Each structure stands twice: as C-alpha cells, then as structure tokens.
Image (cartoon, rainbow, N blue to C red; front, side, top):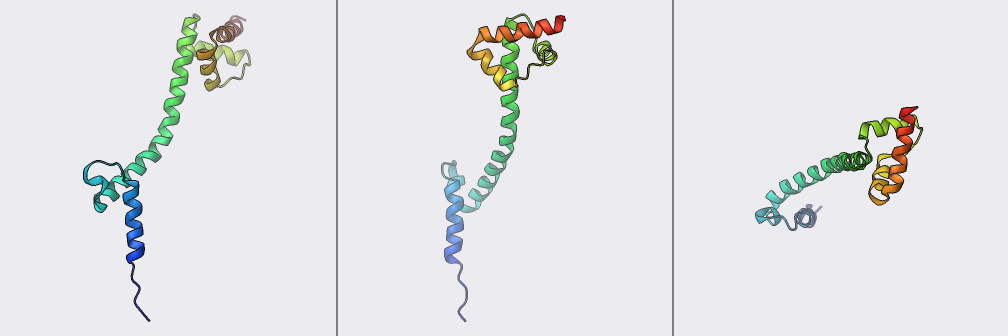
Length: 119
C-alpha cells in the first residue's frame, strides 16, 4: 500500500489562509505563519464587532431621538415614558427615522407623549 502524501491538501489550506490575508500589511499578507495569526485575530475581531455594531447603532438611534425631542422641548427619557403611557408602540429605529426624515410627524408624536404625561 502506498504512503499518503498531503501536498495537495496542505497547499490548499495555506492558499485559503493567504487568500483571507490578502491586503494585509507587510508579512501578514504573504508569510503563512504570520498570516495565520493575523487571519485568526481578524476573524475574532469580526465576530466581536458584529455584536458591538448592534449596540452602537442603537445608541445612535437614541442620540437622534434625544436631539429631535430636545428641539421639541422634551428630553429622551420623558418622551419614551410618555409614549409608554400613551400606548404608542414604536421602536427606536422607527422613531429615529421619523425624527430625521419627517420632523413635523415627530413633533406630533412628541405632543402625544406630552399629553399622556400631563394626564
């Protein structure tokens, strides 16, 4: 029985790593041993930042809603509280979109929140 030679598979594996490291600076892009470390780290960062991205986007929505609410004489926390009392079920993504694209509609939403807080 002939011995097993791994040349093809080893080459395929190295090629895959170097393809992933394409565009990396210096030896990280073309030296296999260094490229494996760089690719592993890059994949770890990519995984971690997919989670972080969601938090950052939500905080951006909140900042936009707060800015628009303050233009209408109200704070973010009081707006959210008023919307809960008024039973308005809008998520932060939609609220932020309305605040940016349709300020008059947002001011109507704020007035609804103010009315429910006053009552």
